[in-house]
Image 1 (cartoon, one colour):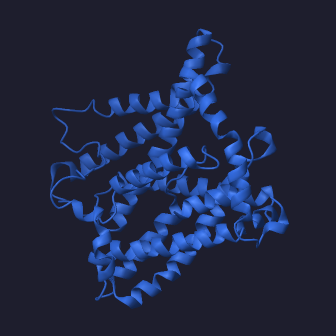
Image 2 (cartoon, rainbow, N blue to C red; image 1 turned 120 degrees about the vertical axis):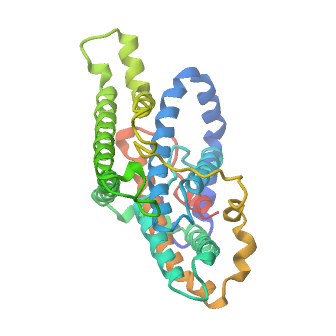
Image 3 (cartoon, helix red, strand yellow; image 1 turned 90 degrees about the horizontal axis):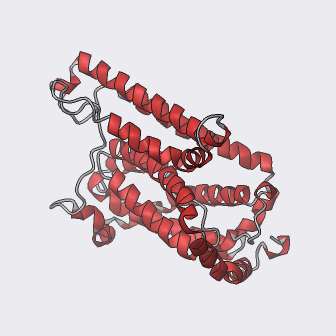
Length: 343
């Protein structure tokens, strides 16, 4: 990116679109010619996207009293992922939920719940205004070429940011394992599965499942260097080992039955999005005008913080994906992708 284009409106977006159009057709042709080989990275990216989204969706459901669930996070991630993969400038970038986003939404929910004229009932509507402000801010950043400043960040800064995100993922994973040894909120503590012995058994079983999945998934990624097994088998395990291990350990979790109380091990409760009473989460747009004007204006404050977070996260991720180590031949698309993220 040329430093001279920093504050020239639309120039960065224009250059990104031109570069993308030159290789857009070839990307689809190469993908179709790849045949079944495309399934390996597809399944890996699918699970790499879905598992964190489900995890943070469960955390959001707990922190927002069920206002935002894993259903909403999955649907939003799927829609954004499909749109970005089709018309995005760097289609391999994964859009999803991260711990900083969860922290912001938790803070916003606690703020809304503490205000009598807003309350938890208008939390989603107020969040809608926050997202609208965020989209406009990202649009302005993309138009003004703010992504040009990402060249000022060294690779060390990008790697440190990546380490921070990885540590937040690890923190949430460890906290999830620890929570399996306790009684979750909004449940009946007198139920059979919440008796001390069964709570401990649930925690130990969850520890076995999580440790087993982690160990086998890491080992399967190095299957090509194994000294035993046919070459095609080692290649299959290396390519599809992670999704296969997810399926295998999920099946193992269904082994306890009969004498084991229902609810052990604990599973994600996913409400039917089309059931009566669940539709209100999908019709938030009808409640946008019910939010008091003062809170519509105040929504700019968290929106500015989220916009800065998305700008830095997206730009650093794009920069890391364009490192010389990967020997990429396609041009970058920092400005256009940020514009698309705003929409």
